Length: 304
Image (cartoon, rainbow, N blue to C red):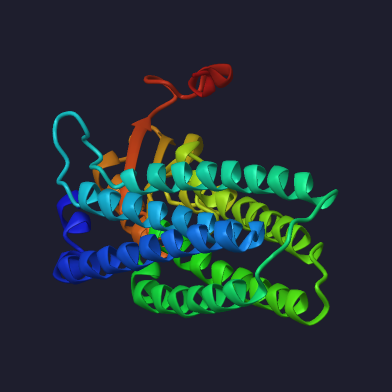
């Protein structure tokens, strides 16, 4: 099963890697242009947008490396395989985004009292360039985003960047028309808040996998009820649902069987049902009886 899973995306892997590499390159170049332009123009909002773009480039670099690691076959050290490399990379990306957002927030609040002069035209042109590149990067990663939590996070960040670039463009226009310099730190605060909101919304699935949480689409009570309803099963306990990696759920459970029940066909029936009804192809089932084995004496099986 593990071999099949890790080979699933292989035909498109090299093409996908090239797309990610190109997206990284244009985002790094954009970051350099925005940070230098923001410094020369005196716009912290433009620098904020540039730093966010750099965080997306770093996210794509991590995603690129994690994609390659995740394709490695299981071995003695990692018997479940390396698929969680992408989940770990996603966590690193989100933590970095939180730190970036807090730093930008502090910078913007410091400028609220005395907003500096801002070159509106530089801001408008560079933010416009950023908007084009953000939309282009999102287009490059759109197909891959349906296959990987990590790439999906990068794709959503690029869409968020596009929105931030639109805000920066509007800010540059306001400065050009009315010379209202306070709009620059205000926009920076808005961009920072948007980044934090975005991270909070996306971090849940990553933490859920790393904390061995049950997949959202599976109801533990429903799974237990279906197992308990099989002929010959008297009790279900020690049931655990978790995700080995994104999109690859697993189950372990103890089934107390009626005395004299033939466990081999019953276990085969249970596994077939779990695969067909719940998509659980990886199930570890331990058969027990009241007379022997665990049989959950006073919850002893549930104590870790």
